[in-house]
Every structure is written in C-alpha cells, then in structure tokens.
Image 1 (cartoon, rainbow, N blue to C red):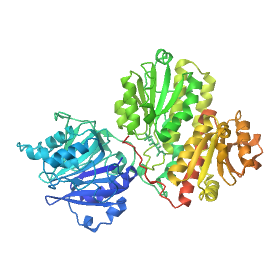
Image 2: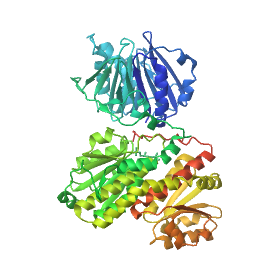
Image 3: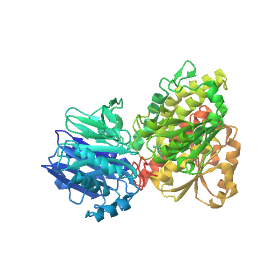
Image 4: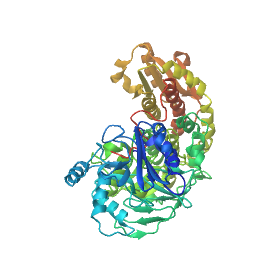
Length: 616
Ligand code: AGP
C-alpha cells in the first residue's frame, strides 16, 4: 500500500509532488512527506495525517528545488506519526528514501547497521534502506557515474520482502535512482523532465508515455535521460507504453466523491468492457488461444481473488458452470494459497483483481503456475504486476478506479466473465446459438438499463436517511442474489462502518434468525422467479419478528408478489438471469454511499483501508 511520487525536471518539484500525492492518497493516508533537493541539500518535510496537512506546512512553499520524492503512508511497521512518516534519511542525512512495501528482515539489518554506528530515529522497516545505501556507497572507492545505482543495488540485495523505492543523494544532486520488487512503480517520460509514481493516474495529467518497471530493474533518472539496468546492473533499452486513459478519467469531474462518480460511470465502463468482444452473436477473445481439446481436458476452473473481486467469482460461478459445463470453484486468495489446493496442469486458474497488484492474489497465481496450471488474470490495469506473471491477461475497460470501495470494477468484471463463460460455451458447443444470442442482445442494452437504475438515487437517499443510525443490517438472497448480498454487505461495512452480515436466505433459520428483533433492518434481493417464493417466506419470518425490510426486485418479481408487506421496495429493470447481479448491486452501492454521506464520513478514504493491498 502507500503511494510514492517523484519528479526530476526544470519546474518547482514540490507542487507537482503534492498534486501527485493527492491523487495517490487512496493508497494510504495516515501520514505524508516530501524530500526536495535544495541547493545541494536534501530538505525533508513530513507530517502525520492526510496530504492536506502536509500542504499546510509553510516551509514547503519556499522550496525551489526541481528534483524531489514524496510519499503517502499506510502504516505497517510503526504507528502513524511524523517520525515514522517517509521520506527517511540515513543517520548522516546524505540519502533520502521513500518506500512502498515491507522489509521482512529489517530487525536483523537494523542490528547489523547499529553495530556499524548507524542510528535510527523511527520504528519503520524502511529506515534500514537509506542506511544500507550509505554503508555501501561509502565503502565504494570507485567514483564513477554509476556509484549511486551500485549502492542501491547492493542495499536491495540485502532486503527480503517487497519494495518500490526512490532514492535521492546529496552527492548526486542531478539524478535519482528507483527500483522495484513486488510493489508497483511506473516512470512517466516527459520533455526535459521525468515523473515517477506508484500508479499511472497520479501523473496522467503530465504524460501519457510510461515505462513499467519490472521486478529488480533499476532506473537512473536525470532531467533528460532515463537509463535502465537489470538485476546485475547490465544496462538495457526499455520500450515505453502509451496509455489511452485521459487525465479527466482520474479526476472527480464535478462529482462530490470519486465513489459517486465511479458508480455513475458504470454504464460507460460496461459498454467499454464489452467493446468489440461481441460480433454477430459470438464472443471474441483473440488473446486466448483456447482449443476445444484444452477446455474438454480441464478438471475444473478455479477463480481466486480478494474482497469485491472475490464476490465477482461468486456471482459468475454458476454462470460458468451452467454455460460451459466446467466445474468451477471460487476461493479467497489468502486462504487458497495456504491450504494446498488441488490444482494441476488440467486446471484453469482465473485471478480477478482490479488493481493487478494485490499481494495475496499474485502469490496464489505463482502457486498455481508452480503446480502447472494455466493462469488467466482479469484486471483493469494494463501492465500491472499480475499481468506480468499470468499466462494470459484480459482487461476490463472501466478506467481508473480511485475510491477505495470498488464499484465500476465489480460490474465490469462480471460483464467480462459472463462474456468469457459464453466464449467457453461457444468453443465447447454447450450452448444453443439462440441462447447465446439472447444473452448478448441483453448485454448490449445493459448500459441503458443501468442508466435507468441510476435515476432512482433519490429513493435510495431516503432509505439511507432511515438507516444511517443503525448498528446492524442484514442482507439476504438466494442463488446469484446471494452473491449480490455479500457484495452489498461489504460495501456498507467498509464505507459506513455499520456492522453488516449477508446470508443465503434459506440459512437464516439455522441460527441467524435469533439475531432478528424489532426494528432491525433487513435487505432482500430477489430476481429469480424460481426462488422468489422461498425467499419471500424467509422474509415473512423476519417481518413477523419485527424487522424493517427493504427489497430489491425487478418488474417481473413485483408482479408475482404482494409488495405491500415490505417497508421499502426498490424496483430495477429486468434482465437476463446471468446479468442480474450487474443491475441489482447498483442501488445497494448507492445505499452504502448515501449512508456514509449521512454519517458525514469520508466515502473515498474509509478508515484503516487502502485501495491496493500490496502486503499479505
Ligand atoms: C472493495 O470495495 C474493497 N476495497 C476490496 O475488497 C478490494 O476489492 C480487494 O482489496 C481486491 O482488490 P483488487 O481487485 O485490486 O485485487
């Protein structure tokens, strides 16, 4: 987690770095800091709290330097405090470092360094890095232009763990060195200036040309050059990538919060994700060369992911099984990787991750590769770490998702996986042509239906007003609606801090119904005509016990029921069964959003969370 930014050019660095940090704040927001090369000295300013606190430090305005590094922190080692905030310097203050990641062996390294007269000020794992660099730099008698990169390499050779690092050196005031391992870092190429960031949105307004640094690649940047070195410090040429996202996509664009903007972007995100993948009633995945023989030989599909991305797996599991007839399992990455999963060369493992940087998901992928399985990454970020590990990558085209609570990534991922299920079915011949065409037809009108759903936000606002003071809320559903219940429950937990549980409606009477008492809020999701009667009888059981009920249903279901028994009825357009989670989740995303707003919370940056979880 944590966000890092760097600038080397001719402009004043501080404003560029602060603007970059503000854009990266979703990665961590408990302290922030900046280091600027100022007349041959490294000036460090940092503070506890948000980037806005840092911006208020008067001294920063006076910093004229045009080279600098900056950091916004999500604490792992050491409490959030000014001392533990980055940048960290070595004890002689010759080097400054910002770091994203975790150094697992920092205790031993710190002891070794203390034995060599290095002193430590903070409780962080990071502080060993500038001290190690100092140690190796001062031991190196060769005074050539590569001395700094050599010291950084020798220091990183000692590190166990993950890191993306930027280094400033007093003796080398016109260069900066960066390196990464298992933590993201991109370099943006400008004209007589270069940029560094943990991810692209932070510097998208300055350049569209990026270098995606691979594990253990080093870069030495000056104002007008970027030199790349491999893990043995052999210099090589690297090709840049051009990003098509526009800078506006990473701004709030008039919305009060990123989350609201991203909820409203869902029709576009889905249109873009479908893109040209459907053509004359068929689905195209040209980048996957799966044959009928390969798919027939599969023993199962494993979907592995975390949080909301894992809920996507739950929402598409039965779709994949029913359309392609391939047995499909879904697992949480942090559990999967430690329980010796039954995966072999006959398993197709699918990893869903918006950021492409989630540590547990990437580790699970590596494990599956070791076991000989084919790996397929489903991500939103081109060039993200997972795409460099996976055998195949397919992309959602949701644009940058900045709010910590995932919304448009979720619905785009379901869209892409339903398309994938149809692609498998096409190859295997497990679906009637007509059935395939019907789903595709329905998928193409889905964005318009979502636009309809977004019009009911006033009704949702009213329900939020009734609910925001509650301490508990329950979400119920059966079948595919149970997956939506789980995602809706996570949304309300993470941004409004209300305790919430999701249950398969039929499970209630096996224990949980004991918690239902007068006045408790229960939200039911019902879209399947075959299951609705059963879910309604479960809801009636809780109404009898005094619960306040809100149901999310479609027109067809509304006609089948006496809806007067429910406190609130949220109607959404009807759609194809497999696509229904894409529609039903939207009012529930809005509900979590408006509850959070009613409570006056920071919707985009909920407490204790960060957007990309790059630590285990
Ligand atoms: C979503 O609202 C959450 N903040 C979180 O569960 C997220 O989905 C999870 O951390 C996985 O992230 P990824 O998709 O980037 O791998």
